[in-house]
Image (cartoon, rainbow, N blue to C red; front, side, top):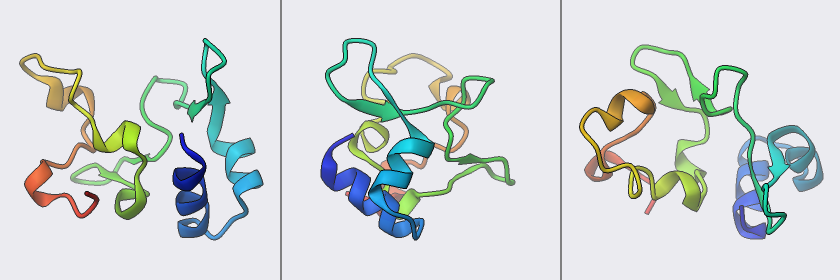
Amino acid sequence: MTDAAIDAAAAFLKMTPEDFIGQYTVLMPDRSGLTLIEKPDGSCIFLEETEPPSCRIQPVKPEQCRRFPEHWNFPGWEKECPGAVPEENSTAK
């Protein structure tokens, strides 16, 4: 997560960047930066279990999310992230 992505998501959620970092991020295994935490089941912390599932921060979702499924090129990838929005329907560019 970049500083800009943290600032945007924090502002969208009406919280400080420091609170966002403490609540929603973790240090990457290689210690090169921060990444979003996952729910205990491995799903995204911002995946809302609505029908259909949606991203809680869709308008400001970070690069790591907007690039999904760039590295997930296999049949059925959509089932791995039920909150995925096809690029043509995405408001985040």
